[in-house]
Length: 192
Image (tube, rainbow, N blue to C red; front, side):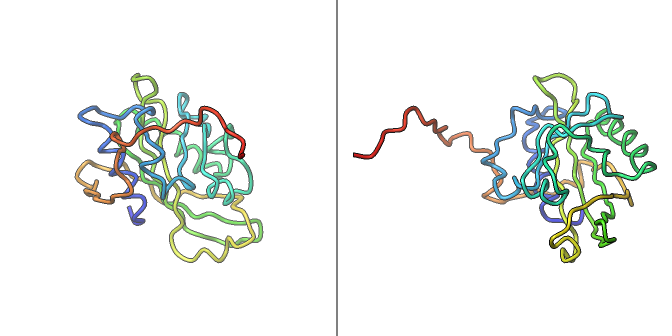
């Protein structure tokens, strides 16, 4: 993992497990990962050959030029990468380990950037893991994406992240907020 946010997300995922093989999706507290939210996504991977975005952060959607929710994760990958990714997603779910992907992404006019994605398996309602909680980060110069969207992606490298590679993260902004009260708007009162 090259990007600091990749380490932050993987460390947060590891802390959420609390002795379990994987955390449940309901354990994810958006307030705890607020600095990362615009690049975070949830991937439904019940069928690893047809993974779908359940949700995706605004900055991630802007990078691809459209709302990703409900679309195929493999839709913007070249064919050979897509086949490899389907197998890798299944392997990560079975191993119950995060997956680190390195890729080259291109715009319509062949501007290229390097991306790193972390996909950490999560369960849904405490069943076996069928989803991924992930983040996509840009490595290097962002200028090829200024005013352009990613239209194509090619897998360069992939590896399962071993437990000893998960660095302890002591970022105050990425800790569970168990003690924090939940606020709810009950009624809006018009000004007097």
